[in-house]
Amino acid sequence: MIRNFLIFTVCLLSIVLCKSPNIGEAINKRIVDPFDETKIVNVHFMTTRRELSGRTHCDGTGFGYITDINPHYGTCLVSVPAKHPIGEITMDPQLNQDSTFQLKGRLNIEKDEFYNKVNSNPSDEIIVFVHGFNVNFDEAVLRSAKIKYDLKFAGDVVLYSWPAGVEPGLLGQMMIRSVYDLNFSEAKINREPFYLFLNELSNSGKKIHLIVHSMGHQVVLPSLSNLAKKGKSKIIQELILNAPDFDRAQFETILPDLTKIAQRTTLYCSPGDNALVVSQKVNGGNRAGMCFKFSGVDVINVNEVDAPMMGIGGLGHGYYSSRPILTDIYQVLLGVSVERRLFIRKSGAYNGENWVLRK
Image 1 (tube, rainbow, N blue to C red):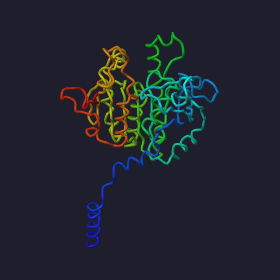
Image 2: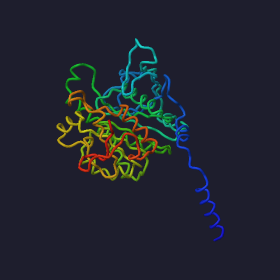
Image 3: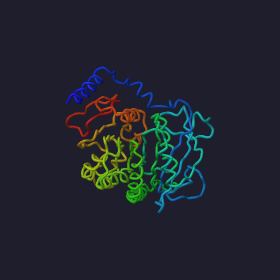
Image 4: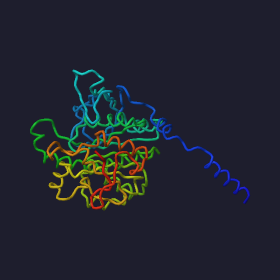
């Protein structure tokens, strides 16, 4: 009894007398690289795209638009320019390396080596990025490198690239409905491969932050639900959903599984997202990214910072790479509660979302 009392007293005095950790020092230790100059960034990838050639390139000639039987693993080297505008990717051979992105090559590796590389990073955090509809492999790689650079992220950014996109050519680009249907089918085919990929990655013991965009939710969300049903719990630290092109009713059905699998879920939505409006008409149901309240999810309306002008100035769909949302994601990864983050305000009681990202 006396021994237990002494232990309790020592613990209590430690809490009272020891100073709280300095927040600034904690962030400085977490961010080991300032990412303040042009830098070669490694993007580890797992892709189910069919390989088009044996060339070790990360451009559009490497992987295609149909799911392969066997996944491919590797690392792409990307030169990220110090002077790139936030939200933009410029590739121009006429510019110097400080002003343009450059793909520097690709290293193909086997599955076991891939996971060993990811596990060997001294950081205890990983970002997994899953892109959306009509995104070629090279664009997905560039976006992944940009996310790592702009977020000053010390851990690896791991790209899962499914066969989105379309064969080059004007005719293919004009047949947008056919492209959408083809990509939607490929997304559903990729649920099982992504399930296996994430299940394997979760064995690393690292904190996994999962960033998903657009139709990529058709790949990710059913896979997460399946993992939860198989007994996996809290393997995702931060689940960040950007413009989910996913049926609202289906989302509500699997939401208990998502709550089980992730420590926290943040959903960025926009009623001004023209791509989701089109998807709603095609699929005949509201999309989760059009701003609806979901229990246990921080739903944030980004329309103020990313609405297309007069509804026609763009799709208003690529906001996951914009400065305001990257700023908020940075705070999400630090674990800051939504009500304490910069530029966030409560939404109205009768609005679809919980929060609004201020202009």
